[in-house]
Length: 328
Image 1 (cartoon, rainbow, N blue to C red):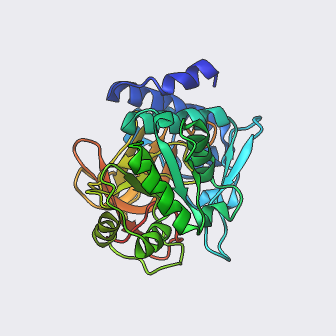
Image 2 (image 1 turned 135 degrees about the vertical axis):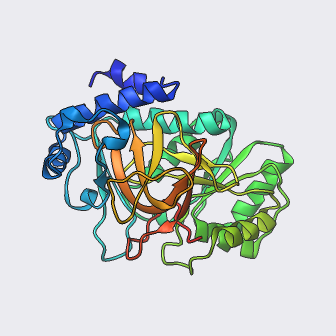
């Protein structure tokens, strides 16, 4: 698709525009992504007869482990890989247009919080930094690079330096985003405590086998006490997507206008459930145009009437993922 057409994804203003764009992208991906086209054909579906988003088949996320889910005749600029535990097959996301990912993550953040350059970004993501191909690190790199505050940066296990940096940012009343993998945030507050009520603490989920999984309420209470904040924010994203949803402490994630979540029946994956019912999370990410925009995740959740959604855990035997999966 042309750049001007891709740009229009980020100008979606209402449900009707979303629906129209989703149907256009579905037809584009059936024509241009061979794996997705084969999947639709295998289901014995006539793509020409699909007339609303809920009829679109969602590609199981496991396909990203064994197939290149990418448009034909387009070369990827970069390949992102998942953070699967040792011995498990990693998902791979072949990204053909990095500018689309960059535009998506900047716009997603800005809609939720404001311009990224106005925040000092402090990253506590040791397990992500210790491997190649992380889409989260690519995003946080941009956040740090574009911040107007020199204190922005990564911290691995140097908790004392991180603590002093946060104290300095608080002293100078600098808006601060602390984004961290769950187990690393817990490690920090076990050693140091703060009273920094203006701090945005954002956990990206995942214990990565480093700690026992705990319920979200217990986790957030521990972090709130440790940082002296009222709420803990969360980011919902994954290797296979190009967009993110954010939750500002309530556990309710809000999508940008070009992203939407539906809930499928776990016993009948082609049945879309009503608001308030629990099932598998299906994600529509229209920014993911040259891959697949319609992905059936292994996350469990429910959607509310206003379009916000909760993540309630994951399917049994699914991989330990780094995309905000805390058992409720």
